[in-house]
Length: 324
Image (cartoon, rainbow, N blue to C red):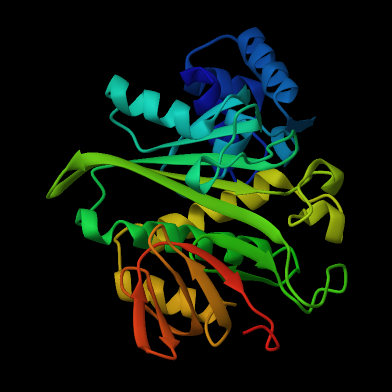
């Protein structure tokens, strides 16, 4: 969005009353005809701008694009939007290598090469929320970076819960529908979102961090793997713009400034892994036991038959009580 159009929509947003064409033209130092052209362009971008005897006002925003997502966003991320990227994480990495000076949220309507942990394919059709946050010089040590994954999971939970649906977090980075949700198999929740983080830096300093979030919003569940589902399949279509804004605002609140203990406490509150019998598979071993706690900045504490194990990374499977 060009600067004049950005200023125009900000003025309409900040005004408590409609603003007339002459007033807008004077403040922006352009003609009334130019104001009308900018208004039409904003309408094409999804802004429902009505006009009356007293002037123009924003009635609602229906678009899902860069200007619409930016409009009313409290978090200070610059939004870079495209209808399709191969991967929003890859685009965020490109921006980091190009030397961008802003924290950026890269957003796509669809991804052709979305991926999850361990380079697994992540189905990313049109209608989901596919966003990667590029954070420059995050204020923590390399050892503390995992906490950003946990902050993202908490932000997803808080944003989704405002849609009227209960979700929980499975260690380390999956957000699942609550097992109390009637639509799903009562024995376990299906995945609604996942998180992938990438970083670059030196041994004692982080140059940049990318937090990629995939949230199955307005996606047909038939386009997803059997272990996943979507908000649309459970409660119907949601307002993606509002949902993404809530997610970004919540993540910013959790991480600016970063408070490790607060994030871990919030993660505990929403965890579906703690107090569960689990099987953790790591490159070196498979561990079974009861998940008893989470340790800053994100290690899982498991009580096994051979004592306490502290696990920093691995695939987590929730076991039924009959599984040993």
